[in-house]
Image 1 (tube, rainbow, N blue to C red):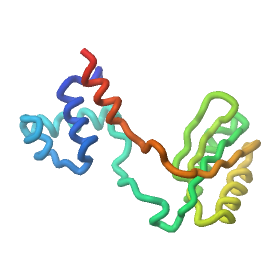
Image 2 (cartoon, rainbow, N blue to C red):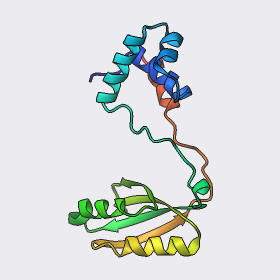
Image 3 (cartoon, helix red, strand yellow):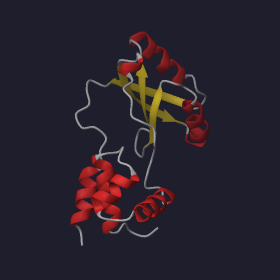
Image 4 (spheres, rainbow, N blue to C red):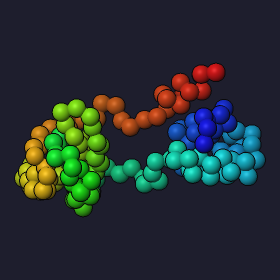
Length: 157
């Protein structure tokens, strides 16, 4: 897929504003046919524009009030296997591969500090993990967002 055009950006803007918007509602708002919006949505999905259809849920509401970021240093050759093993740990919410001193940044949720200690020990127990450093999340100051990027893209010629 090439660059997003004006219609794609407007469609994505509507979805960023209301992620539950139906195809019919989007079509009405943009003054397009339902079929046009549906075709655009399929095209965007195939291009990998939509990352996840999982509804965001609060780990706190599920009984996991503590969140932490675990910086993980690994043996590079073991990275694919380590990533697969991390995915088996239910408390791992997200993981990002990084460049620099740290190889992975892993977001985890825990019931309490003892549970967090056990999660960290489980990560350290993975063959090829050399070191971890755990930082408690004190609060989210900027949530996950793409709206500012959409607005910037819409302003560009």
